[in-house]
Image (cartoon, rainbow, N blue to C red; front, side, top):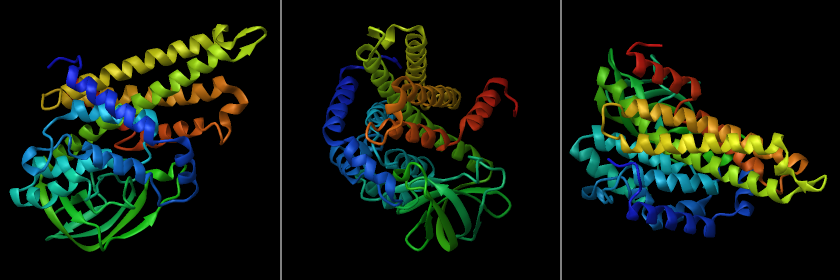
Length: 364
């Protein structure tokens, strides 16, 4: 597959950027930081109206039958605009788990709702800082789940969750409704991600896949989500680079733009390099979906995008000096999002280990 976007894909990027720039503003995002349990409902309404929730799902289940490349383009623009809701990634991950590993009855039951966005999905695999633990925190007995999952992104609003659990002598991937699950909101510096602890107590669940295949399936779902998150990170880093550049060529000190000083222009040049590296890795990873090296490509995209967004958000604030840390300017929104995305779908150490494993063929 070519890694150059065709005319249709470029149109998706252009239109999604136009829509998000018109409908998402800093003034709407700042109040979301002050209370937990709120997200940018306008963004999610837009995502449903535009069909972004159905983009990468099969037509047979009300999807648009496109793929990771097209969804990545949307995520990139969502990253630029600080979309304010985690569902684009979480819904996609839950839907792909059901599409790839569920029965026909399970697909018919869940996928149309996830495609329309009326059903919100979450993916809950992590135990503490471990994105895919050897011993999952949940136990599946028969078709009942017990245990606590901590820090689940979108957990406060999700209707269903795909979970990684201990089954009878083997790991299992399962899907559970969350209507009767106890949720505890986690106050964070990016409350719009809707992090929550989920307490399962004799909760009905349906098995998707069991045994060694369950762990491979869970890693595959994490990799799919990591590629979407990496696109979002690359979009955020790109926005930070542009804001830093624009300020550096207009703000003057000692009779010249501050961008004329080496300490500033070299820093912006470094961000540019990181953004372009992340963008290239994201496009490559999305184009490798379904290929044997997909997880390797996903890990590379995730690592480079995390470094790009972290560096760009930090350096953009520093280039602005004192005003860079004010509430009103809003640069901290990107700093908060950069840190949130850095831990969702597995942190940097997790993906570095995955990359080493895949390149050497041995566990790191």
